[in-house]
Image (cartoon, rainbow, N blue to C red):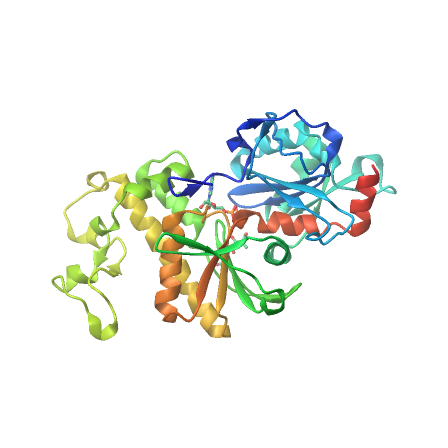
Amino acid sequence: MEKDGIRENLDEKDSNIMLPKPSLDEFSHLSLDIGGSLIKVVYFSSNSNCLVDDNGMRSPEDSLEVSNSNSNWPFLSGRLHFAKFETSKINDCLEFISSKQLHYCGSRHHEAPAGDKNVIKATGGGAYKFADLFKEKLGVSLDKVDEMDCLVAGANFLLKAVHPEAFTYMDGQKGYVQIDHNDLYPYLLVNIGSGVSMIKVDGDGKFERVSGTSVGGGTFWGLGRLLTKCKSFDELLKLSHQGNNRVIDMLVGDIYGGMDYSKIGLSSTAIASSFGKAVSENKELEDYRPEDVSRSLLRMISNNIGQISYLNALRFGLKRIFFGGFFIRSHAYTMDTISVAVHFWSKGEAKAMFLRHEGFLGALGAFMSYEKHDLEDLIAH
Ligand SMILES: Nc1ncnc2c1ncn2[C@@H]1O[C@H](COP(=O)(O)OP(=O)(O)OP(=O)(O)O)[C@@H](O)[C@H]1O
Ligand SMILES: CC(C)(CO)[C@@H](O)C(=O)NCCC(=O)O
């Protein structure tokens, strides 16, 4: 669902249709991806009609039906639920898990001492950082699953099992992509979280993290917050809608008296230097509109990620680049900038694609790391 170009959260707060609250024992197998900025939560309900959040509200976009045909576990049929929380507000996440009794939804180690019986699959740095907190507050152990393994497992699952999942975005046009299971690999997975990981994927569990950059989603939100005084990420993203980057960015035309530099393929409107105009004008931060600052920042970071991604695709001869991570938020301008960068640098050879469940790759991968017998065991309970 698009709202002002920003897709509504795949979280529980955007729901609108009332349904009766499910009984707690309908939920099973909780998995977590605890990142530097956000905690992503995935859990399963065996009742596929169960589209209900913690307020008893129904949401059309916070879940995904799993049927015998699209699941890796043919005995599983139901619905996957998605939720997210800011890592700095981890207590909200603990409360959410506790209120739904999701902490009983891991695997059970029958031989373990009473306190160690519930084990939840968790990935991301927070699976290490917050393990003691989960133990203390919920009495669960976090079974740590490697972050890169999870990102790849989540992406492969979505690309193979969910349709439509991948789409292109250019000039305001979204085009869903039909994935040929026999012609999926190799591809480059670019996960734009707080930082950015670039992974060459060659098959199920076959991959290499080939590059990364610390200039990512955390940079946009961190710098943006300092420069604009915005109170939330969404507010910053919304501001960028009304902004004009030409006020702050130095364009080729600014340097070349309005002309293109066509000999090296640069039009007059191409950005020659992000934020470059700010040095030549006698202005302070207060003299710039936050809208324009946000727009320039978003453009600078998206462009840079698009360019580094292309260079890595070129390095390994990859034609397809899938972008995930919560930085994207299905935001039109972000996707457009990344797509244009990839198109421009590759001269149309490489293609940028985006994923509907962009921010949940890691959490889904952690979910998929439950052993088959754990899942069957849980269903039995
Ligand atoms: N509500 C939000 N609050 C904070 N950041 C948000 C929000 N929504 C989207 N973002 C963006 O998403 C980024 C985090 O994305 P994601 O959850 O994929 O990464 P992460 O797992 O937290 O980071 P990492 O993998 O580097 O540890 C933030 O840096 C920010 O740019
Ligand atoms: C450190 C991680 C993997 C944590 O998710 C991520 O934030 C990241 O890929 N950062 C970029 C680090 C780098 O390659 O420069």
